Image 1 (spheres, protein in one colour):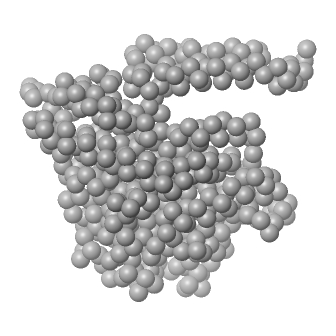
Image 2 (cartoon, rainbow, N blue to C red; image 1 turned 180 degrees about the horizontal axis):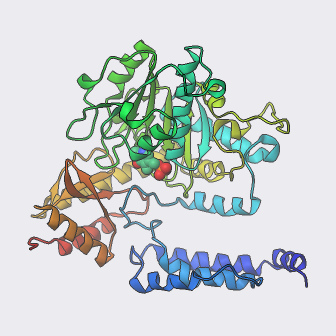
Image 3 (spheres, rainbow, N blue to C red; image 1 turned 180 degrees about the vertical axis):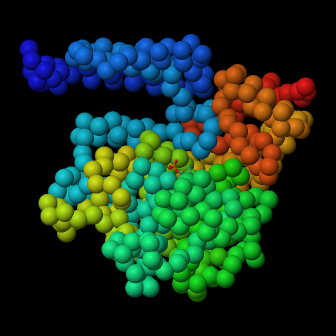
Length: 463
Ligand SMILES: *Cc1c(COP(=O)(O)O)cnc(C)c1O
């Protein structure tokens, strides 16, 4: 049998897919209870993948076997409920299943003509996101890999618009002799913002970095005068403390000055969907662009970020690509809203997650994350040796021990116990342990087990 015949047979017989499905279900059965970090042995076993580019065609079953045998044990079970590292969401079952189905569809969501279903689900998701966050009706959405990419798209739109107002077309005339723009951002802006500032040619040393308070929020009185050449970058959800910039006050001033406001709301924008928490995002609708993730707080599978922009023309112009073969339709062509062309149809699982949860489910799930976070912080405050450093407004807790050395050693102990996983960060010049509750699967019991593990791991003396 030649290669083509073999592959037709595999498609027909489906045994390789069934095998992968069996392994996937096996994984799912264990993921909520297993240790939250691979064992040393599992990591050592990754050596089985190391070989030169193989000469011969393999058996498909062997390829999947290899992944299951040595790949699965070396994964991070962030789908479960006791992974609190970085800001990483789990997956809602309907979203995961939708992605699984869409894997077989293997759609290219660049244009309507390439995938009517992907285009339709993008349009509907765009509308729903507008409604969930309370954004202006004219707001458009681009579906990208994550907030880093969404920040890039939004700030490219801002750059396009502010230069265009000065009769400068960035696409044609470039940056070299362009009128100068100003960029104003809080000193606690996320590293992905810093990266985008570099990528777009603004330069980090040209940014007017604004002082923040002890929670990482921009101090409104420290804001410089704004004008119509200024891009203001605000944050909904500080990656350490979870704090929110004062949007209402700053956006009102920025609107009056005709400045552009972008909000990086990777995980924090979702507070807008919860009655008890939406005081945090008051005023966000006055901004011009927003970046948010599906794969963090909303718990879609990975690779789901969204750029939202009330100036659709600026977004499309900034990311525009052209070519005579494009079939530009009356319908939505997704590529015009992102910097990419061919993209997988990530709106499928985003749509499925929102369709399944509904507004009420989203609210319940996200408020649940907050409640578990408050539980975590309250329990840690009871343990002598831990100090909670932030106001627990959303889903983040930062703590430290008496000294940096104790904090570091305690964190390493927690990681080694493998009951839960947390990482470290820096806060006001000192080492901290950061806890992010971002998985729908985290239960009261998970938090109790994790707190017990923190207590066991606590180091009071390090010499
Ligand atoms: C996670 C995060 C980002 C980056 O998002 P990705 O989806 O990882 O690209 C940007 N800003 C904030 C505040 C974040 O928490």
